[in-house]
Amino acid sequence: MTKGNINVSVENIFPLIKKFLYSDHEIFLRELISNATDATLKLKHLTSIGQSKSEYGNPQIEVKIDKEGKKLHIIDQGLGMTADEVEKYINQIAFSGAEEFLEKYKDSEKDSGIIGHFGLGFYSSFMVADKVEIITKSHKDEPAAHWTCDGSPEFTLEESDKKDRGTEIILHISEDETGFLEESKISELLLKYNKFMPIPIKFGTKEINDPEFTPKTTKDKDGKETTEPHKQITVDNIINNPNPAWTKQPADLKDEDYSSFYRELYPMQFEEPLFNIHLNVDYPFNLTGILYFPKMTNDLNIQKDKIQLFQNQVFVTDNVEGIVPEFLTMLRGVIDSPDIPLNVSRSYLQADGAVKKISSYITRKVADKLKSLFNNNREDFEKKWDDIKIVIEYGMLSEEKFFEKADAFALYPTIDGKFYTFEELTNAIKAKQTDKDDKMVILYASNKDEQHSYIESAKAKGYEVLMLDSPIVSHLIQKLETTKENISFARVDGDHIDNLIKKDETTISKLTDEEKTKLDEVLKAVVPSEKFMVQLEAMDSDASPFIITQPEFMRRMKEMQQTGGGGGMFGMGNMPEMYNLIVNTNSELVGEILNTKTKKKQERLINQSLDLARLSQGLLKGEELTNFIKRSYDMIK
Picture 1 (tube, rainbow, N blue to C red):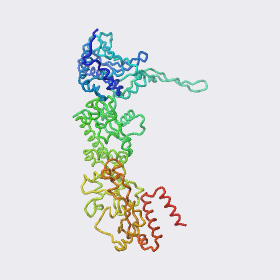
Picture 2 (spheres, rainbow, N blue to C red; picture 1 turned 135 degrees about the vertical axis):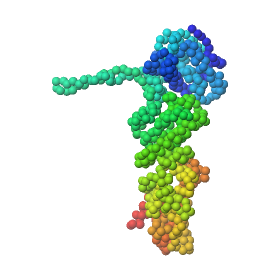
Picture 3 (cartoon, rainbow, N blue to C red; picture 1 turned 135 degrees about the horizontal axis):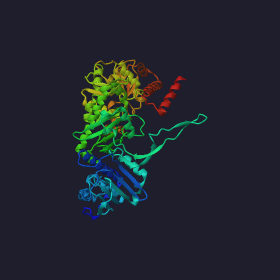
Picture 4 (cartoon, one colour; picture 1 turned 120 degrees about the vertical axis):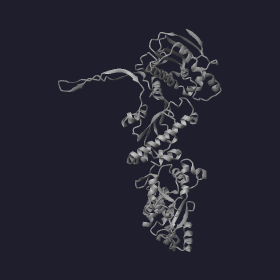
C-alpha cells in the first residue's frame, strides 16, 4: 500500500472547492459521468485501431445508490487505470491547475465556474462527499488499484481484487448532502445533464411486458372470454438516448424522426413545430444541432431559454445568449459543439472567437434554410408567415447579415391576403404610389377594423395597403427607410390619403380665405386644443367631413419607445396622445357648420362630427362612448 500527499501547496484545497462551487454542487454527477464516458469512448478507439486487446462489447455506465451505507456508486466499463496512472492522473495531472486556481480564487467570493477550466472535474465529487474511493482495473494486463482520500491532501493507494475492466467511483455522501441519496434527485440530475450521453446509463431496473410472451385468451362454459395477464420481465432502466437525432446525418432522418425528437426534448409541448433546421458543420469548427421553429406569439420574451446547449452530448445550459444570435433564442432545439467549454462565464463566451464564428454560422444557416423553404413551397411558407414573422423581423433588425439575406424570403402581406417580397412590392406599387417628389410611399395598416375607413380611402385610389401588426414594426420600417433607396412608409391613418401620397394635382377649396379663417375660429372654440390640432384641407366633396389622424413621426417614435429605443431619446415617452383633426372644406356638412346661424346648433354639429370621426378610429371608449350614445338617442327623440 502506498500513502502520500496530493501535490498541492496549501493545507487543504477541498474547502475551497466546496466554497467556490457550492451553487453548482450538483454538477459533480455530470463531471463523473463525463469522465466515465470519456474512458469508455477511449477504449472504443483503442480497440478499433488494435492498440487494446480488450473486447469492447456493449459497455454501459451504471449509477447506484446505497442509501443505508450513504454511498453513491458510478461504475464504467471503460479503459480503467493502472496504479501508476492513478498516481499520475488523479494525484498529479488533475491538480496541475491547482496553483493557478488558488492564486486566482483564494480571495474571491464569486462562483466563476472553475471546475472544468482547471481540470478539477473528478475533485468536484468532494463538494458532496466526505470520502471518495476509486477502484479501477486497466484494460492492460496489470493488477487493479484502490485509491482512497478523505478530503484532506492525504491519500492511500493499494492493490485491489477487482476482476472486471473499468472504474468504480464510490462517494461517501456527507451529512449535509444526503439529498443526493434520493432516487428522485439522482434521476432528475441524470435526465438534466446526461439525457443524451453517447454511452447507455443504467439507473436501477424497471418492469416491462415480455415482448416474447403472447397472452392466451380462453372461453368459459358460458362463452365469456378471459385473457391472461401480460408476463412482466425485469430489464435495465436505461435513462438516456445515446443516439439522439442531431448526431445523425440529415439524409438518414425523416420528418417523423424530427417530430419524435421534438417531443423527446419537450414532452409537455403539444403543438408540432412548423419546421426545423438541421445544423451540421465540421470546419472551421465542429457544431451539430437541430433548431425548431415553434408557433410564435408577439411577446418577444416569453419564448426564450428553450434551446439546450451541449458539449459532446453533455448538457451545459439552456441560457444560450452570446452563442446563438439573440433573435434565434426564441426558437427551440439543441446545439452541440465540442469547441464550447463546459464551465465558463457568459462574458467569456461572448468574447471567445470560436463562439462568435458559431453565432455567425448559425445566422447564415438559418437564413439559407428559410430561403430554401420559401423557394421550394412558397404557398406553405406564406401560410406560416404569421407564426414565424416575429423571429424574422427581429433578425432583420439585430443582425446585418441576416437583414441582407432576408430580402429573398421576408414577406410583406397586404390587407387583402396577398404576399410580396420587398422587390415584388416595389414593382407592384411603383406606378401609382410614387409621389410628386419621386419617392415611393408604402402604405400600411396595423388594425384592419380600427383603420377600416382609412384603408377604404386608400383602396379607392387604387393603392395597395400592407398589413403590418408586429410589436416591432416601427423599428423595422425605420430600418427599411434608412437602407432602401427613395422609399417611405406611412400608416393609412397618419393623414388624409391625398397628403400621404402627394401628387401634382391639387383640389380647389370651395371656401374663400376669409371663410376658412372664420371656420378655423369656430372649430377651435369647440374642439379641445389639448387633444387635437385643427387642420383645414380641400378634399373631394364626398370625402369625410372630419378625419382624425396621428402624425407618423410622433406615433412611430412612441411605439418604438414602448418596445425599446426610439421615442425615449426624443423625450416622447411621457407626451400625451395628440391627433390632427383634418376638416374637409369642400364637405357639405362643413359648409353647414360654417353657415349655421345659431351657436348651439353649430356646437352640436361640430361635436357630432367629431364624435363620429373618433368613433371611426376607435377613440371613443368608456364614459365618452356612453355620452355619445346618449346624445344620439336624444337627437332621435
